[in-house]
Image 1 (cartoon, rainbow, N blue to C red):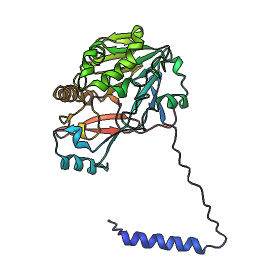
Image 2: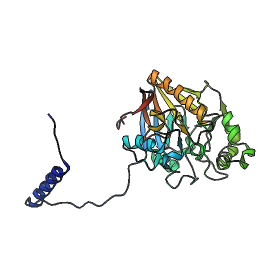
Image 3: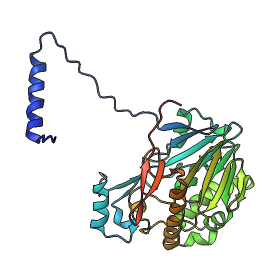
Image 4: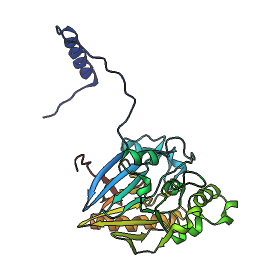
Length: 324
């Protein structure tokens, strides 16, 4: 049986329904005010015996995609977005900051843009959203950085002399620390990224610990090198009980463009070709193991799984559980 509902018939049904309401005796229609507010920007879920929370630093708009996503033409990119009901004229990324409470330690993975307005006024929400989610930044034990780009370390310092996380140890790959704090690069094209990395990392030099590829540097948290986006870009496998979550950071910035076509290159990668090779290798691993993932820039809250699809992959968002 098929049902053919034309637009005209829908309008006709709506008009009839409206007429019935208008003629109903004694029926009062309330006129509620517009609220103009949204739900709190955090989402909590269980990870084995641990409690995990995704807290937003706000959205990060990139604009028309052909300048950032390289290797596919503008019409092809537009079609991929439109086919997935996404606007083709403006790619907007989320910033999904993961907070894990192991019961012994409170660990924050990446910290958003902080006080920088490099990508506009919609970023820099982490500090307020952490408080809304019930976290006191002074109780954070560890900041784990996937890499040293501004949208991942920008929230460490609130000013040149004040830290948002005064008691936290900071963990990062030494290759990324060395690359993005190198004063010699201040004269090059990465100047703004070097400035922000130095601003957030150098005042905390005594609190920085370097992890190694494959190391379980905090209980239940293991590093895996995923170079290409930056020289020391790292993803993390977080294990609690029988459950594992892979925090994939910037392995892929877009849930459609870089997953369905994983060899498309991204303009902000230090080595785009290496980044694409790393992406395919790790996507193969994650699909093979059916590992649940959290992606920093995917649609809120960024939790789901990857499956193989043709020559690429597909991202399947996990349903949100609103009762813990």
